[in-house]
Amino acid sequence: MTRYYFAIHHSTIVAFTDEEGEEFETQEKAIAHALIVANELSRNNLAPVTVVVLGNDRTVLGHVSANKFEPTTFPDLQNHALSR
Image 1 (spheres, one colour):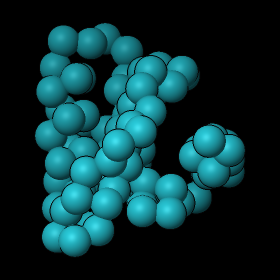
Image 2 (cartoon, helix red, strand yellow; image 1 turned 180 degrees about the vertical axis):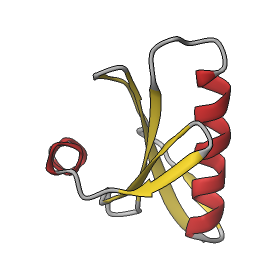
Image 3 (tube, helix red, strand yellow; image 1 turned 120 degrees about the vertical axis):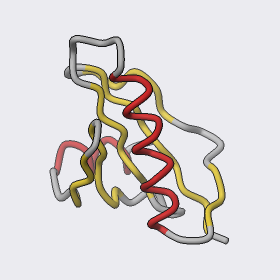
Image 4 (cartoon, one colour; image 1 turned 30 degrees about the vertical axis):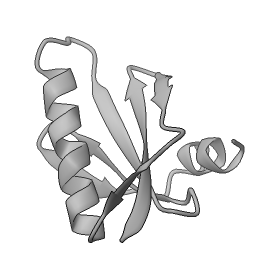
């Protein structure tokens, strides 16, 4: 199993960065987990909540907003993840 990490962005700030990660059998299962988290956090928030999915090497794989996954190539998110 591979370890994945998650960062939660609320509006335009990084609200939480995962230090421990979690193991999943596939990338799809990690994305599904991120989608559940994004939906739960977005339920009562007016501001957008995004969960960034990072691979074992802390490379940004994509980001999830409520009901949506998009592969990410945004340099600002990439730089944030790699600068830790």
